[in-house]
Length: 396
Image (tube, rainbow, N blue to C red; front, side, top):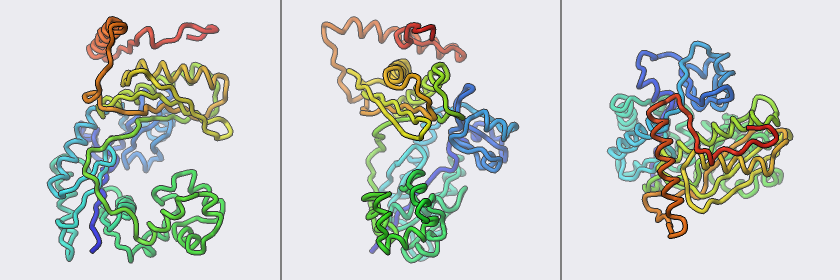
């Protein structure tokens, strides 16, 4: 007997969270994103999306398209608190709950959901999350993880979709190839270039063993074929979500080699990565800098630290160092920072020795002072002097 999995996805989570703080904004456009002239949109409410605002869009463009929308800075700690309530709530309805990200998870409902009339049970889950926590969600139910994920994306917001194996041709085949979860933006572009415009086109090409598919997608072809046959992973792993990395990127509205402009983006990205790590209670040992040049080629460089960190100052300093060493003067379309090698600092033993103890103690006291000052004065943006480079060729 097939298992019954549900994928539960919070709708426009950050925007919905901000609406909870401002119930007077009901029915109005909300945009959540970074601050500053070069910030980008993180999440847009469905009202804002109707006005042409979407994730990844420069904030100045969002303000141009939706000048009357409500604009909010990202508040990871607040979102983390709501996320914990969300997953705790899901545990009422299923013995196995897997946290996939801050706003989505899988449930194994095999032994819980009525098979003859499952909709009332699913509406109860959805309604309780909305009324008790205040967050709208969409639910997809299917025998595999892939199908459950595809089902939850079909009707948003507040949709419920049950997708059986026999429904795959009628429901999934008409969808554009870009909607196929797991292919990604670049993969979809490669497929459209050879005439694969819909998931149905993709399925027929897989059946015909079109050689160009493997040339463009590699081994993923075998995985995709199994998924569209209704096969694939049907397990729910209840272990706590443990991200392998935390990263953010920003795309410039036009190619630039302007040092100060790029540096400002690195500051913003380092702050977002640091806040994300702290919200997840994680530190990382490797800082990765990703850039995309004017020819759309990606390049990355990394630097591994002696000790793990979640410090904004440390992450920014290392990312800036990588940029200056490798990409200074290059025309760029995108920059990104990722923190890898994540560990739970509560379980990590910091190796202090006679030789570094006093230095470590002084640095820790200074960081504490800087954090306390920034907390007391929200408008302040103090950094450790060690995190800033000395003036070089007239640049700050």
